[in-house]
Figure (cartoon, rainbow, N blue to C red):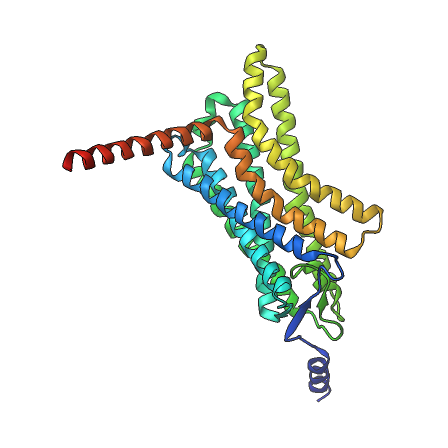
Amino acid sequence: MSSMQSNSSANVTFVRPATFFINGFSNVPHVKYYYMFLSLVYVVTVLGNSFIMCIIYLARRLHTAKYIAVFHLALSDLCGSSALIPKVMDTFLFGHQVVSYEACLANMFFVYHFMNLQSLTLLVLAYDRLVAICFPLRYHAIVTKPAMFLIIGVMWIFSLTYFSVLVGLVNRLSFCGSNVIDSHFCDQGLIYKLACNDNSINIMMGKISFGLLMCTPLILIIISYFCIALALLKIAHGADRIKAMKTCTSHLMLVAIGYLPLISNNIAALTTFIDPNTRIINNSLRQTIPPMLNPIIYTLKSEEVMQSIKELNCVVLCNNCVVFKTFVLET
């Protein structure tokens, strides 16, 4: 009887809100201009990543293991931005700041899932450069298309499983106080702080997520480039060394754009007080700018991509000429 009473009292105290209120960008002057900027960023992101995926799909010379990873990065960037920016526009620009509990958890899952895939894909591209420069004679035997598909498949299975558990753990929290989230999306760290029961497991999982999914890939990328630097020092001819270094520049730029804002934001949060709106704007820029710049960098800095674009343009022009001549002859 006593156990039944304790269970019923536990059920009474456990509160799951029907909705959350997303309260980011409050009291920011001229914030609509920022929403317009994010809309422009999203349009450029969609066009740029769709363009690079089309080029990789159409150009036979890009049907390699490396560009399978580049295609996956573009896809992750496109899906990640689509999970975040349209929802931000709908929430703040159109005043739909009240979000159902289930929709909030779904938004959290997809935003973090695609952020994780972006990070892991940068690690895969670092692995590709490591093998290409340190083991050039064995590159095509090690980095194969089946191996790349397998790596990407494992990444998806791991990420889907991990974030299903992470989001599922929110269901054990009771929200008997505020349901206001001071962010631009359903941020898991801020949701945990709203709980009025034991949230130690959730906080631990959040710390594991940052260490395992953000810091570990960056550390492995740094180690891979340290090995690459040692291999480059062994190259006798300066011209060959520069040529090998050029194959890494685009990836290094992506890593810098993706990780430097993350590191600076966290250092600033640990050392100084950051205004909540400043934090929200910094985080939103960190999540939206790299997916926009990634396809632009790969297009401009990769000779293979530029050559493929030129070849596809020539094919299109030749086909148009043939169609035009056929039309003239028939008329």
